[in-house]
Amino acid sequence: MGSSCKTCGLPLELCACSDIAREETTSIRVYIEKRKWGREVTVIDGLSKDIDLRSLSKRLKKSLATGGTTKDGRIELQGNFLRMIAPILIDEGFPETSIELRD
Image (tube, rainbow, N blue to C red; front, side, top):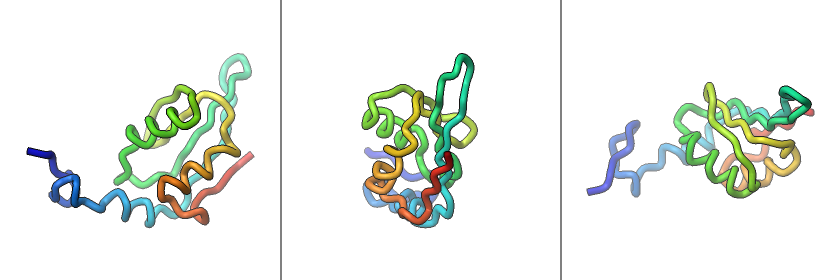
């Protein structure tokens, strides 16, 4: 027997909560943070609470061939992927108008 959505209670095959959450996301901020010894980390912040950050993070890391983590409701990717992240997020179903790139 398959598992059900924690939000709506429907089986995961029928659930549309994550699709709705993607469409309702108002502002996704993508920016670079400098870390110790000049390392750069790409941060994706402002994602809806209904989005499964772990699975999205896993898909992003695989697409970009990098490491990363999810922390405090945001995704952190090792390296500078500022210009590459928007097309991937659009392919994932996020509206282009909601993605804000900060240099």
